[in-house]
Image 1 (tube, rainbow, N blue to C red):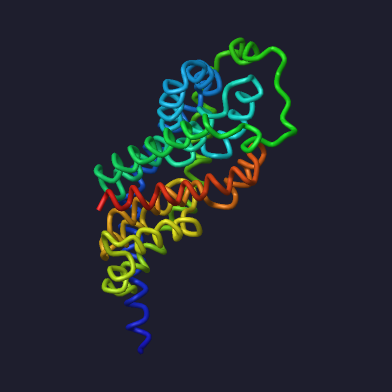
Image 2: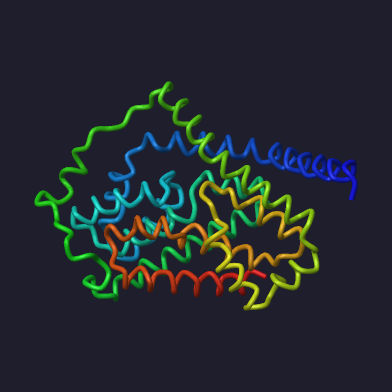
Length: 300
């Protein structure tokens, strides 16, 4: 091994990282701009309006709103708590939480650019199906098993939400928010690119194909479990998954990775525990993995 060979390998690696970043950066920027623009909308008021109807309609509406909402898990939890205290049933709120944890406009645009339109659409449909199923199941589970016991309701119900002032778009604040989001997500994106390029260049294709090949339940389950430690926020896992798909990972395994990873990381679960009981969270994680594996087996 010579110094010339070593620096040649470093140059190849850095060039690959640069090319991947150049490919993804426009989609990241577009996703951030759309996401930050939507944050000037009062999501608490929108969700309250559409989840106070019949059970099926409320769950369907909550799932759709969760997918188009720019809020991550940390932003969704305060909204969810306020709505629950305003006497909204927990079932559509679980749908809203599940959908917003797993998909938002920014993730859709980055998946579209990083992997392709098929995965972006299938990932969105999978999130919709999962969030609807989770919400409908919550209508048959006794509420005492789902909610922490120290939650107090508002006496005025939803009056506080309905009378909330409208948010106004401010250009200066919008630009500042976009730059902050770009900086925050950019760090994770670069980490994801480095890992993805390393996997593409240095992990044998046969090894990835053997471990994650299409159609095997063990491979899809492994992809789902792998999503927990390797799924940072903001779509930073997309370069890694894209590289592994190119090297033989099955599409169903990649889908399972995307479904489990964002929702089952310790930090989001800790945030959810502000309202939801440990028993329910454990059941939620089991149902999440089961759903991911099932949808991964369907999408091969």
